[in-house]
Length: 56
Image (cartoon, rainbow, N blue to C red; front, side, top):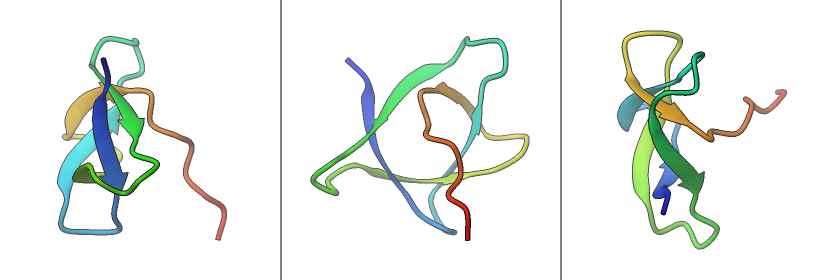
């Protein structure tokens, strides 16, 4: 079972998409009830399953 997350711009737990596929599995919570995370380039908790960043 994946860890439910909600992606926020800032203030969440820093996470980084694991390039090697080894990390905590995550899934964006459709109902908005999940742990707030902020996707960072490096230095965050390694995770797998985050969606690609949205285009502005």
